[in-house]
Length: 309
Ligand code: KMH
Ligand code: ZN
Image 1 (spheres, rainbow, N blue to C red):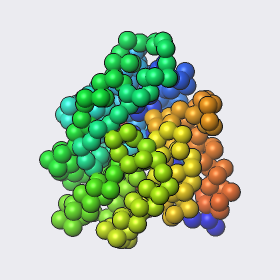
Image 2: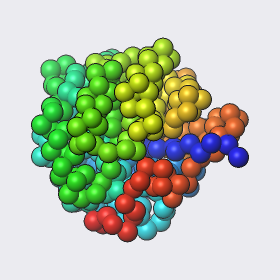
Image 3: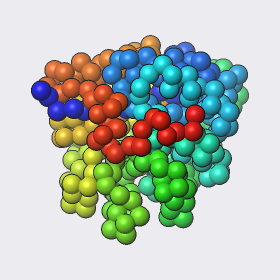
């Protein structure tokens, strides 16, 4: 039997906007259906953001999350992972409100402050469905995605120590791995760490195979057998870097949050289509998708019976 590879699907996020794809889930019902279909296709973890149902603007309102969380939980077994990154225009308190309310098994934890440039996406479109879209994208020229040491420690205490969530440690650059290793050395985070290597965000490390090799090599030195890793290639390199991650011994993340296409120039018609594609690639490479309960075991999660929804 092939090694079990955990597939995460991030179904909507806060980078892409409604004009960019008619297949981007926006409403609670769309997010629920997309998540369930992704789980049915083989995703063990669903990474979740919410949006305002009328406009599609990124939302940190716990009510918007609660409009889809119970539905997804009732209809599939996937681990529901709630973003604490939200959108870089939200305050930290806003970003944490959904996970504080939902007390999930897992939430994201971004390992450093950075520029997060989504403004280049503007040039691809002449007309917009909503006025906020080009404004949000252009705003990323001057906004800092703030994740200070204090912020990180607050999230670890509040959501981890007090609520039993474990983390998807999002590392966008080499320094973020060093920061995570420091917290490991201090006993503030505990193995098995689940590290998401994020490549291809403008302001973070580029989506190049050599960069993934370097991140893995440094994480091996610093984190040794205390970690599992997953690979997220933002944009066109999504499938290639995910495949490389699996070959290197890791897990994979796909989804419309970070890539809208299924092939060069061709929009993915659903999140499930991307999950199906990575399942095919993994199968050809001799790997098997991990079930949600296998993912829970590998990552020492508390279980879906202990969440707040
Ligand atoms: N879309 C990823 C590059 C979060 O939700 O905390 C960043 C992300 C952050 O997933
Ligand atoms: Zn996210």
